Length: 174
Image (cartoon, rainbow, N blue to C red; front, side, top):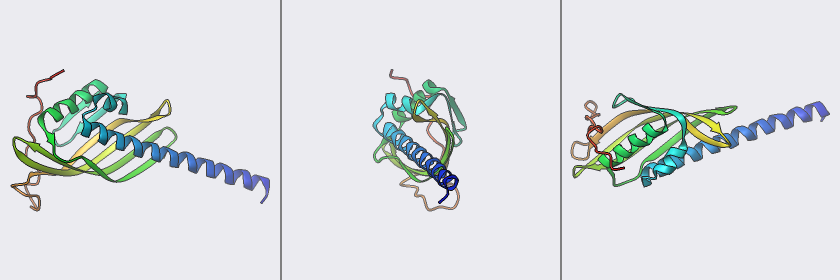
């Protein structure tokens, strides 16, 4: 193989390895996000988001901007809901370009609220940014496709999204 071809082949392989390492780093951030939410580890959760991160919860039509507001949102959410099972992110699709990443995944959640069992699913869309060797979430869109009680069921074709409990009525305990 001529030297120029070998150099090009090596450069192509190095770029592919960088992309694969980035994809694994983003996949790890998604897993750390789920663990931090499930275990109510607010310090770990804060470290997962960039300082200027934004979350848009489409179902609630609410936006949370900045790391502190995002951690407060999750604190309120956990004060309202108790997890009887864990959040699951499924079928991640991840793309990277330089120090920017994009991902989407399905999510499945099960909660207890007011003595009632809830189940929900939908999708996440994330933007990631590499900061000091760590992939962090810079933008997150939460879309809920189904949210219902066990009693109501989830096989219906209409009425799949019940009104979520209001988070603003939750008192801060910090």
